[in-house]
Image 1 (cartoon, rainbow, N blue to C red):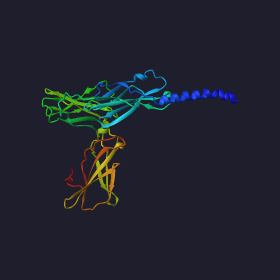
Image 2 (cartoon, rainbow, N blue to C red):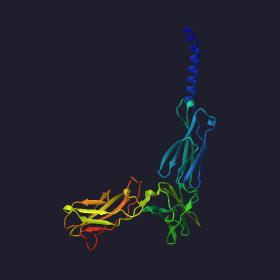
Image 3 (tube, rainbow, N blue to C red):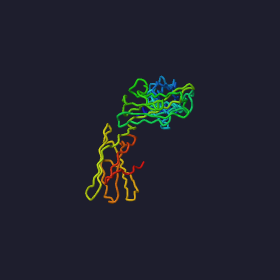
Image 4 (cartoon, rainbow, N blue to C red):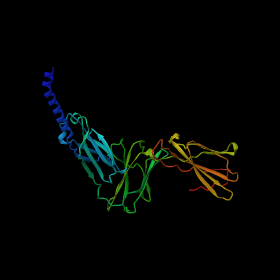
Length: 346
């Protein structure tokens, strides 16, 4: 038995040596970065397609999984975003009037690396500059979109003071349900020039990135375009509350209640703000604002000699959307009723 062990010992040592050598080679394995990095523009107003090829040294690799680590600069959030994928293409949103920056690494994992992920030391990088053949400082100002009562959306903008008087601006939009970008269905015209776009006759999808571009041209050259990406449910402005009731309850408490505005805005998504103004005999007005989650509010009795006035507005809460606009204020209701309403602070 001992002789058999001695005879097999050299073979065991040889196997261990071979295994150690393979491990050593793997630990020193150098992985090249991807090649042929390119950024393609399919005409989706900032949604670009990033493509690449595996390094030539790994084309015939069969024992390991080849993956990729992509970094791209998010021009809307001003930060680098990262993604890992086994595919050779990825789509990301960019502001086309800023530098497009992407860089990509190769990742290798599997038997050839002792099941340890190895990342290429170097990366392949691409930086694309925006077009320089535009008139500077001619991008539109104060671009804003409002989804009125979840019934129709309107986008507005202002012209830059440096925009040539003879120029005309156009709005284009795209989302994933469209094959190509479309032009504004109905322009808002002010002073003979376009200042907005009304989507009353064109429905836009909720919870979907919608890309907008406002551009234009003039005899002096092309205007600087503006690119915006948004989701319309984050731009809702509910209608003003129209029905309010105010009465004196037990112990002379004031009970205020109101009805939700008519329209498509879900009532459970609304949060409320109540402005309470007290006017004393000397005409002095003191105001405060109270938040409410329900469509009613009870306040303790106030001094009889003071007039109490209320008005209400609403906004979609953070449980339903990421952002939104306050509605206009409701009419003001007072107790005791006055011949003329209380002064409405701005």
